[in-house]
Amino acid sequence: METGLEKLMARAEALLERIEAWLPSPSPEMDWEAAVAWRWRRQGNKGWLQPVTHPHAIRLEDLCDIEDQKRRVTENTRQFVAGKPANNVLLTGARGTGKSSLIKAMLTEFSGQGLRVIEIEKDHLVDLPEVMECIAQRSERFILFCDDLSFEAGEAHYKALKTVLDGSLAAPSEHVLVYATSNRRHLMPEFFSENQETRHRDGEIHPGETVEEKISLSDRFGLWVSFYPFDQEAYLEIARHWVGVLGGPVADPEHFRLEALQWALLRGSRSGRSAWHFARDWVGRQGMPRLP
Image (cartoon, rainbow, N blue to C red; front, side, top):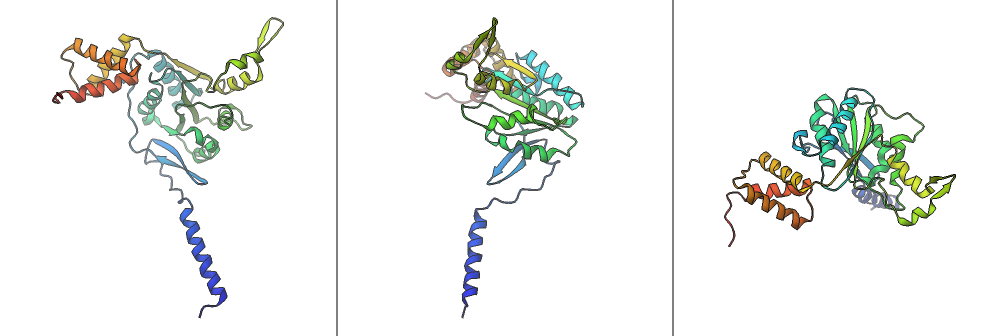
């Protein structure tokens, strides 16, 4: 017959089993040879680096009509992997113009020279100190990749990013840079009412505190690279390039041109992304029977 203590112990063990089922699994052991790209993952109170075993291998030569942007980012990254001073990079501008693809191309170009990329989502920026601790003793050069980065009014995640960029008492790490993309130049929404805070003193314009706070984040990136919408001919050139990469023919250039322009019209965009989507559709339809 069970005693009261035995019953209590059995209930406690059952309770612990139920609690353990809800706890996050232990973080996997780090295998730095498993990949050249990583994602920061979080479950419960634990975060870890998850290897990206099949990164998107984009080549620099496949990125058309952004020659100046490629040159500036490539030069900065080449300095970085060579152990020379380099800057954090903010890539801003029109959507679908190659901002994220250019960062992925840096991994393709320089992974053989020790470059590694860690992708971290905006909601996980508060974990940046943990990420930095994970790679503090590594000899590789790391880019922290923040894609499509923007903050709404009232969000506080950007403060952790400011600290990593240039706001801590500790010296910034020489083997870590932040490369971020955004459609917003200052990463945060800007409202017309904020202009009312601007003051004029002695003929000079002094922005209000709200504007200064927003500018202070983007100002911590040493290199700003702007991307602009493509014109019609650039869009068609990019579409033709991707068709060639995918191995598709362009037997009738005029028909190709008309379909590519119609695709852009339906999408409401002549972006590089639209050109890529059209090229996939064009090549995929070659040799397929037409529907009645």
